[in-house]
Length: 224
Image (tube, rainbow, N blue to C red):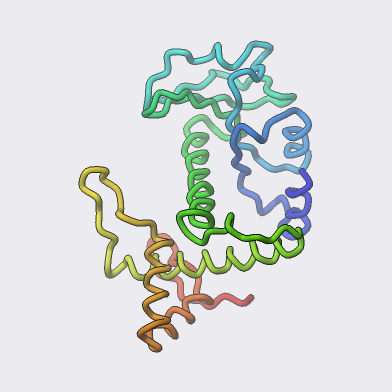
């Protein structure tokens, strides 16, 4: 709540489309706080949380992978009336999500949480190696984290730009790209720093250029 409270000082609640969170971020006080602030919720819930006075593990036991099930009406979850939607992952894990959204929007929105996991991966071992820092002072860690976020946005921007003309090679057996756009962008930036002053200047200009919008390119500069 403290972190969200700090964010609300910079970004008013009316600009929040929805807050997406995993099972660690549940509880009546937390849910009531978000409702009080007028922030829509889309949060995965644990198996032992109560839904209308019955544990969540007793709901949708036969839901199949890739299928979506939901309660006909909103249920009482952690002090709030919320929509409860369930599915099962390809690995067989049941996923229960409570939200203020319609049934068919709930899981579509919740899937966006995976981009957060991808960001953590890019900041840590598979990217910028944040966890290897010897820093322990909170104020220094805060500045380092901010700097790495800018660096990550930069290499991601480069990766997005370059893959438009030179797509990342696909791995046939796993049917996925051989590397992330962040890693691709970091590789291209490293090459530009070493060998091409002109390419580096192009990438430097991208640092103040927003990502292309869906359905077209957006070239309006960003003011920091």
